[in-house]
Length: 105
Image (cartoon, rainbow, N blue to C red; front, side, top):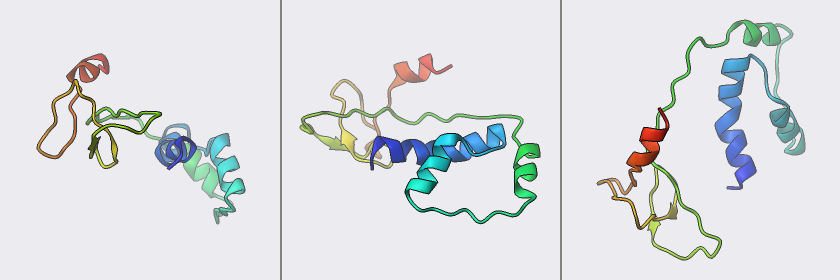
């Protein structure tokens, strides 16, 4: 998975829910990948008027990457990433970065 596709996978739904419309990068991504959304004329108005009042963010683990791709692999919240040697690992193989949790508040 490329960073660009990760951004699309992880950002489009949130943007639509919060802003009430598809962001420009999603439109470009759909065009470049020949994705055609079949919409009804009233869909734009429904999205615009149906935005959320509250957003919650859950934090589970941080990820490490390496340009050399050397290192022990960990599950890392559903994906495979390089294990951070400075963090403890949960029973599920996820690394818990308590400092990042503290800074996210």
